[in-house]
Length: 70
Image 1 (cartoon, helix red, strand yellow):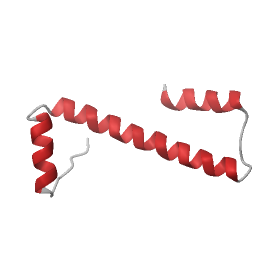
Image 2 (cartoon, rainbow, N blue to C red):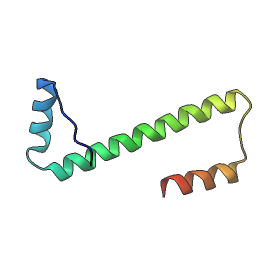
Image 3 (cartoon, rainbow, N blue to C red):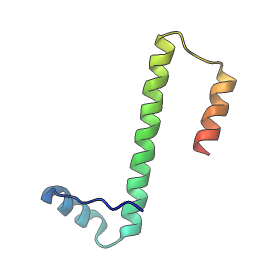
């Protein structure tokens, strides 16, 4: 378990307004945010690899994606 302390009054108010005391919805939304960041980072790395001539075949790429995100 990870606890996060927020020391930003404006952000804290925004979170309270959006989620109230619904910690499960907050946790789910935060989880989705982290997953999106991971996917965006993976895409960025992939673009760099393609630009550097380090690409792999499409079948291998799809298999890697499935194993990572399913």
